[in-house]
Image (tube, rainbow, N blue to C red; front, side, top):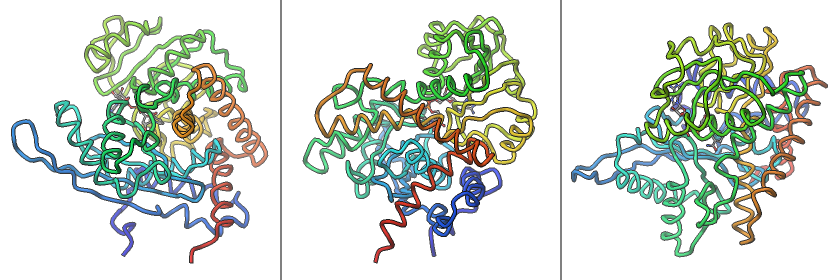
Length: 423
Ligand code: NAD
């Protein structure tokens, strides 16, 4: 029995969303559609038990996952998420989106993802370290600098990557900086990596805005999720003259049509770990976030946020998917009908993995680039990739999402076909 038999995707699950996105691209893949089952089946999935000793002497068990969706174009690449809602099915979808994303920006990687079903806020720093180290040891049999390279995702950061790198290095007897990306700078991390995903959201947003005649100077933006991705993107848009008019995170929703002060916002987030203590804005019901008056909406939190009812109420002209899988397929159709342009996750948030690739290359060559070099190269890769996707969308008269899948899946399946089936 395949492990696929263990998942029963519901109509709103991320894996279901991903499968519908694949079905939509098949008519544009020509003879390569023959290989489409490859896209619908992760290559490998590992479920691990992560037991750790808690500070009070008790033993707690956590469930961890690492899924390698497709390795046709290179080693697996994808983040590690710590969240109480993590499931095998979610990690499968996130790994599949990584396959598509890496191919969309033409990086020599396959797609992978990992996660632990845990609320890390309930752990002490020492417990977090023990859990990270045990998880890394458990998935150590399938990761490695040439096999599968994890990175940060929701609730993971440079410190966690440092522990992962150290644990893998201890187990293999060599300092293996290239086993993870998103590391601190002293440990082979790259300048520009922390803000790279947000920067990619900004670059694709800037290009999309230019094409639809939306001036960023004076544009109003609303952001869901003020973590790594949301806050970095918001800062860059504000730097280009936009006004941040609404913010939602796990602690609540705040609105201020005159704009949030970004320095204050960051100070509150640092102090409280959430936005709700920010004083100079009105607290509103969470559901009201979706009909706030704005020009650009940036979902940068979790999957499945833009449902059909919410899609019907969105006032923005442009949606930039900083998060992975924020829009359900039926909601995508509603946004299309309503003329709302969506820059999909698989290109919009590809800035992070692009600079992760730069980090990996720098680690191998032990030669590090300046932040300017990194930002200029990132900008060019994102602009060129989006242009190719836009041309494909115009040519077939399809959405940017289906066009991104068309460009990426052609590359993935061509690699599959050229490699051939073993044995
Ligand atoms: P993060 O942990 O830094 O931030 C997550 C944010 O989401 C926080 O502000 C949190 O309050 C908010 N949030 C959580 N639950 C919420 C809820 N129910 N309602 C509203 N807000 C909620 O995570 P991140 O790294 O910024 O990742 C955010 C998204 O971007 C995820 O979908 C992730 O997969 C995607 N992504 C991240 C990267 C990266 O480099 N970090 C790269 C590509 C894509």
